[in-house]
Image (cartoon, rainbow, N blue to C red; front, side, top):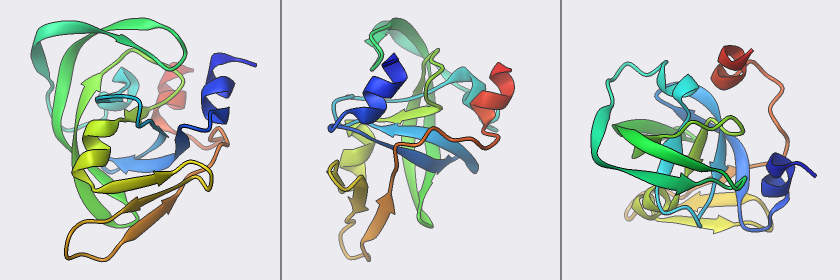
Length: 150
């Protein structure tokens, strides 16, 4: 089983399509990741400039690589079932996912993740609950990272 297949089969994460900065992207929802990340292929499509991190740091990816993080995209729009949220996304040279949404974003969205049913509930105070259903299928559409990587 490849590293990507191992991650997708994990009972601790959910994968699926999210909309980030108005682009559909292949996402890994990973509560074990402290921060959220975006691949440079997707970030190139953003209409915003990244900031240099004051102190670059090494990130261990879900497929057992270590990558140096040096830039961050602040306050990116992440749309889940029509609900707009925001996330700071650290640029990470990865190829298996367009974004990794970590605990920082999950916490800010009052999210509850059910890995058994592959669902995420956003339970903002005084707002209706939003439920998003992930899957484990690798997208076959024309997503940004797959177009740029070819």
